[in-house]
Length: 360
Image (cartoon, rainbow, N blue to C red; front, side, top):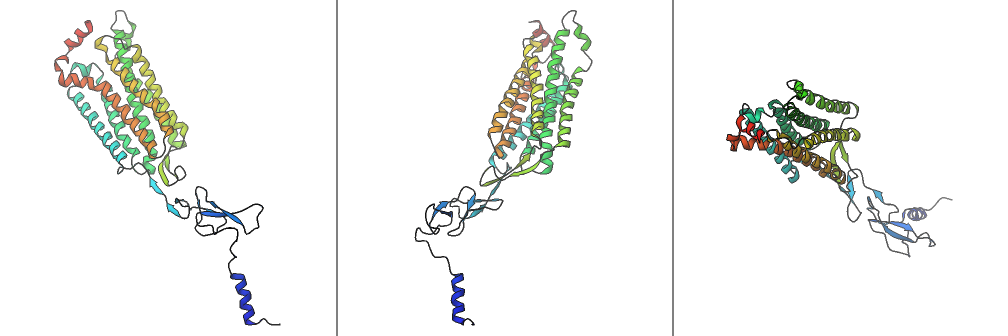
């Protein structure tokens, strides 16, 4: 028997009408979901707030939903907000201050290099191995400038070269200091009557030390870049409301190998300088080296726990600060005493004064 039109609409309305409200509880508002109550009828439920990272944007939803990638829940967990992209930029006050500091120290190191070149024929410059000193100052200028690679939005090129450049430049600087320390000790020992160390003088031993020690770091960085190079990365889970842009080291093992090799060179130079710290006044270069490497080792030994306990752009800031402070320590302890004599005590910058201090 055919269905009457009014019966058809009544049946259709019965299918599309909303489920009747529960008499056990009120509606669950957005930001919460319904959960069945054990031992109660199926229409009785309780409203539970959505857990961290999930939302409901309608009433009486049975499940909380995760936000799309790149978004995070608001405080009420009823809508998603876009995450803020964070990196250490030049517009950031922290990035600006670090960049200015790096440029200022690079300029100071360049001025010191100019002073040494201008007074290259004076005894105090000639007595401390001019060529190695020039190479040390150039590497310090580059170390200050390479910290700028860490500032700004991470790109493929900057991520690829920032850590290897830092490692190689610093290995050259520490190798120069190690070479200066060993040469000073050899010169002192060769000055003793009947010493067999005289045969090592004039053999350009300092060049061999710098080249060999730096070459090991170059090979390590080359292997790093070939096998597992650093690359730009975005961490969306470290902080709930931020997308943190940074450079992934690619190989954490190689990153720490580069740092540990620098520390190894510094500790060797520090040990030699410490054992020879009581040389006569004319050989007191080792005292300056001792304090410079003490500063260097202190900075980088404290770097590891600080670096591992920070996150986001502050990890980058910690590494930049370590680069700047250790480079400034090397520059100040080794070069500033000589600049003081060259510029402010020129009467001490002569061979007679050096020989007189040797006799005292």
